[in-house]
Length: 392
Image 1 (cartoon, rainbow, N blue to C red):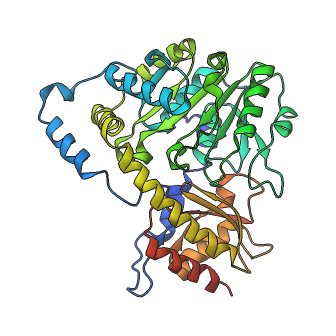
Image 2 (image 1 turned 45 degrees about the vertical axis):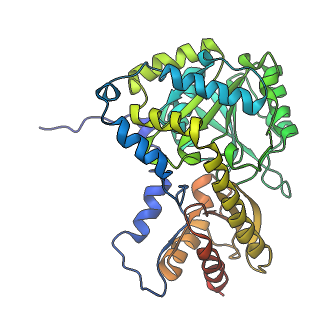
């Protein structure tokens, strides 16, 4: 008798990725020319990497030395460049030994959590949560403790509320700013309040700033690195993938005190040996040559966000909760209907693909995420028109 192998019950209990689930709603469908699919589901740049980078990488591929392993935490020259970038951006010294390069920011998060918490521990996760964060915790047997934002807060959580959730099993608090899924940009005082709370209670603050480069120019989101004691509390995560349009290259970064970096290095060696070499080459070229190019894209995205946000503000049906970076978080007008049902009907009737709030945690049934970065400006009026027409 052939018996199927048993599966990890923690992994088996986790629902599949929302991205895959929503894509299945439109899989195999054809769309009329007068109403093509508008995909507002996955957070991806709507433009390719700079042509200069693509030419540079083509040339680098001719070099036989770029096809092998790199050190576990990345090329020394990239770690140096990234540490220098962070030091300049935050106005505080960060050393190359305090940063590691990872296979995307998702891996940075996974390795950091693996290094901070074990099965049975708790981690505070603001809700609505980035679904991959919640998924990874549950796969590891770590309990996510949900922190809801207060009504009228613009989807910004409160450190005061978080403190009431801390217990003997709490190991960390996770923040994302600018936020995924809400787009909310947390004020500096909010980030500092969470940092002070984590310091006071002896837990880690994991701060995901994947979208920091999409803040207005000259805005420093916080000054945590100016605190000489940051290394005992702060774990900082970043993605080169969004700023340089390298989502398929999988290249991110983690910054922490040297003791935690050493633990992350051990985990990294077992997971992927090292980050992909070509992604590292791309990140290095981007840091050295393409920050002005990235800034011009940020200005374009801000204009698109304003176009969408202003349109939603004029709506008598859809309520804008928050908007920023890549995302708008909106309340749908269909009382008593779950957001999954609403999103699926929008895909069916309006060829508009979105992620329902249900997929970002319990209590999010009235909300829908619109990821507007991967559509062009001329699609925003189309999106607004379809939203207003839907179910009216």
